[in-house]
Image 1 (spheres, protein in one colour):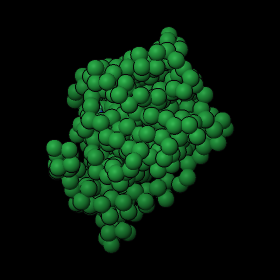
Image 2 (tube, rainbow, N blue to C red):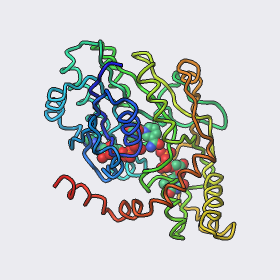
Image 3 (tube, rainbow, N blue to C red):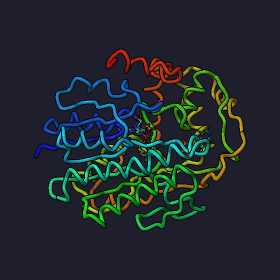
Length: 350
Ligand code: NAD
Ligand code: TYD
């Protein structure tokens, strides 16, 4: 296996940290550079266990800063990019769309430009792998799936900014012949997930016996994938996928929000030695999210057939593992919710 110098952007965040861990441990011959601004969602505790690895280095930086990116590509002779860094929470994008446009659109364009300049339009031995979401495809009705051919139809400022970044990646591929690849994944869950998203927020609230705010009628549907399985899918596409292709990633695992929340409550009651039904009483229906997409569902048959990738766990198994992790890592949860995790960076890096 040849050596690669891989810039993983956003690897202090949720999914990026799992993929950085996978690559650092599985490919000792690769050099992994974690490029992250450490926004509220970035936490170096997420990658603490690989911090001392000889093939890993953290670089604090902003993908909106082209000069720094140019320096990093040159200094470390970056050959490959796996691009996670983004603003990722829909509700925040409704509050403040501009930081999403800045980071997700301009940041991605900067990264493409820095890679293009450093690779000097040379394709061989390079790859720009862009991590995207199923939300770019918009909302489904009761039936059907998103395939790689589904027309883009984003509704939130978050999904519009991700759609825009996908278009920019394809434009650099088509215009400059850059070796690009995109994957669009469904909703992830698992350890190190920031407790503003549905599953970790509700786990935290159940532990604290706080109310569980379900938006609208609770009948919105999401397609959930364990984060470790997203990592193995990226590994498969990165190494065996075709340049210029798009791969949809998902586990054919749709859940209506309210059913998922009830399952979560029931598992948590068992784990916390509470009476069955106790946590369900915390469910509170609240005002709906504006522009709320009704249903997401990924058709993952292309990556199944072409790359032989399948998820490793069922939803029930993944959810058990996730809950166990949050219960065993209550300090992580406390530091993240109090903002104390930022102190870790100051102590580590000054
Ligand atoms: P996250 O919010 O947990 O992490 C984002 C990371 O990017 C953080 O570490 C943050 O510090 C960093 N970052 C933000 N702005 C930056 C900037 N300007 N420069 C450098 N770093 C910056 O996000 P996540 O849930 O891990 O998602 C990662 C990627 O995967 C995103 O691109 C997202 O769109 C995509 N995705 C997420 C999901 C999901 O369910 N979470 C599903 C499909 C695709
Ligand atoms: P979220 O985790 O924010 O992911 P996304 O919006 O990117 O799919 O939300 C998942 C689903 O849960 C979505 O339909 C919105 C809903 N939701 C709630 O009902 N209450 C909440 O407090 C949150 C955060 C989400």
